Figure (tube, helix red, strand yellow):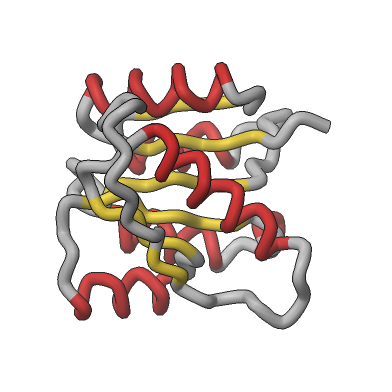
Length: 149
């Protein structure tokens, strides 16, 4: 089955770039501008359980940490991996992300290649038992040949 990625990003430009990159890479995507709309979709009967949630921290109405905490408290999403996309790159932000349930933290700006590698790492870690809750930093690459978000 095609991996499903839920994108929660308030910037329309970043949301669009991420959606296009993931669709071109063969992922099924659902994108929302804020955590409230995403949570409403997630609890809707018949909505697909995402394999991965990409969330920005600086969301309106409900920040990314709260979105992750709410997702992780629901048994239905026990196997869903969570990844943070953020301009914040402090150690405390990364620790809070890990505590909220993120397995990967990708700092903006990032290239399409970095995004896809981080997603692959997050989905791969879902296949390895005992690694829940790791907050793996996405490796920084100096590639200029791919789109940057």
